[in-house]
Image (tube, rainbow, N blue to C red; front, side):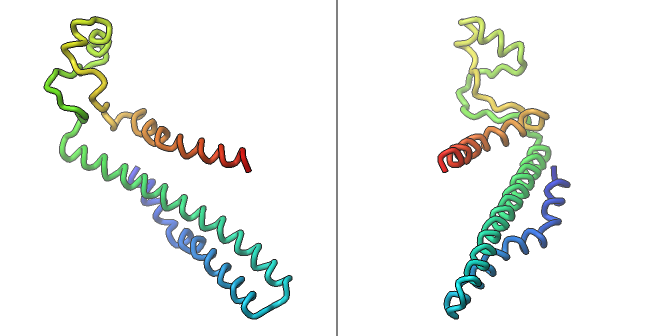
Amino acid sequence: VAIAAVGMLATLGVTLSTDAYGPVADNAGGIAEMAELPDEIRDRTDALDALGNTTAATGKGFAIGSAVLTSLALMTAFAQRVGLDAVDLVATGKPTPTSPTAVLNAALTDSTADDMELGRQFPDFRTAFIVPGILFGTMMPFIFSALTMLAVG
């Protein structure tokens, strides 16, 4: 994960150049308008400005992606350093089941379910399915919002 984050940060020069293209094209359009140049030139600068907005959005995607990978690497390094296996989200003093069998038994029997705290412990995020699940789960509202906006326009 850390190597992937460094790989994304290695493209920082290209990302910054594409991000800076938008304001330059926008300024060119403003200069053409203030200089009262023909409409043909303003049309060209408007097309370049639209391209600049697209490249700026692409650059922001790279920045967000590298930030997610970097924070994931930092979180994993911290968890390994302090020996963190799981996080008890609500400390109630009741015993928490530690195995899938104990969770199933506690869920199926009423007497054990009252004595044990279920669903309060965050699973080990170093497993192969947890971290992608968290990342995709947090992306879903934004994906559906974007799809909804595209469907309306």
